[in-house]
Image (cartoon, rainbow, N blue to C red):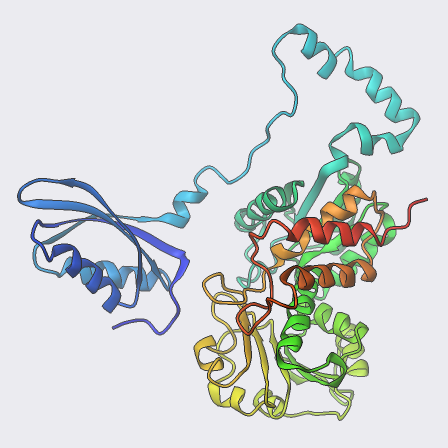
Amino acid sequence: MPTTRLPSAGFSITIRVSVTADASSIGRLTTCVGEAGAIVTALDVVDSDHVRVTVDLTCDTADSTHADQVVKALEVLPGVTVHKVSDRTFLLHLGGKIEVTPKVALRNRDELSRAYTPGVARVCLAIAENPEDARRLTIKRNTVAVVTDGTAVLGLGNIGPAASLPVMEGKAALFKRFGGVDAWPVVLDTQDTDEIVRIVQAIAPAYGGINLEDIAAPRCFEIEARLRELLDIPVFHDDQHGTAICVLAALTNALRVVGKRLEDVRVVVSGAGAAGTAIMKLLLRQGVGDIIAYDRKGALHLDMPDLSPSWRWLAENTNKNGYAGDLPGAMRGADVFIGVSAPNLLTGDDIAAMAPGAIVFALANPDPEVDPREARKHAAVVATGRSDQPNQINNVLAFPGVFRGMLDAHATEFTEEMALAAARAIADVVGEEKINPTVIVPSVFDSRVAPAVAAAVAATVTRP
């Protein structure tokens, strides 16, 4: 039976199969894969003779169970032999995804003497005399620590530091690819707030910035706030601020598409954790009409008991009419839905109940809060966090350029003005003449994005 979930490159497999060498054999393979709900992305002939042909059949599946179903469907085809199945995602991660490469040649004694002892001592003494020279003479100039405790990893939850490492490696690779920033994973085997703050404070001299990643709320708020007070380098929690920047950029262009103003719209946000809170704060800073924040305990309002400090702040600054109902009820007449929560919370009917020209950002990954295919039947603009859907809202649009700009400007802190500037820059890269319902953000591979964001961020920094 075909899967109802969307196939993804994240579950891409390559199946080596042999089949009888007749004119219809390859067609039977691709038809079988398609009927099983997968998407064929490549087919390569490995070997052949007069009797049989061996091919590598690559396809996107929805998850591991679906991949097994596709393989079993092929195995029962007459004349087909399945030899092996390779998970392309696991193959990509073998041995890790990043490495350290020297920037200088070490070909002889002369070069070694200047890069290391005895020549390096002169540089050390220069920095001891003027510590600010570390930004000019060491990796501090272009290096960021990607810090996590593994408590809130990609919707997987508290999986611990070792299991979080593949994500942090990926983050470091994205920093380099899109911003030219050298980043390194710092995964901490502790969930104690005080200890995390102490560790990051202790390692900070080697870095020009700190990127906090996948630390569970509400501890992430305290960790960020305390580190900002202690350090003279920018501290940026990407799950909060990177997401908020990208959402504001996308919403700016989506509102242009539907002809509405931010100050006139009512927004429903599902998920009042790190990302949702930062999104709402940035939208409020921009003058949004009203927001209803919804989380596991319901719509946040002032009469709700046992509000955490962050939820109390949201209750005091959103939900003007004190709505206390369920999520589908909040959707009725809303102009915008932003989901940073959990899959399959809404149906197409819930989207149909929104105001005309509705905007839906269903960003839960890998499965959004509402099936984007159903949402598009009723909403004017639909965006997700998935790379295989139009309008992917991805933090890689923000954080490489944000850090590039902060490092270039020798910034000592990340500010709200930087966030607003970055969002404007991302939105403007698309260009008002090019935006449409399926293009509200630039591609993550658009080479103009990171430089535009970096320039906009750097322009907010006041030099001494």
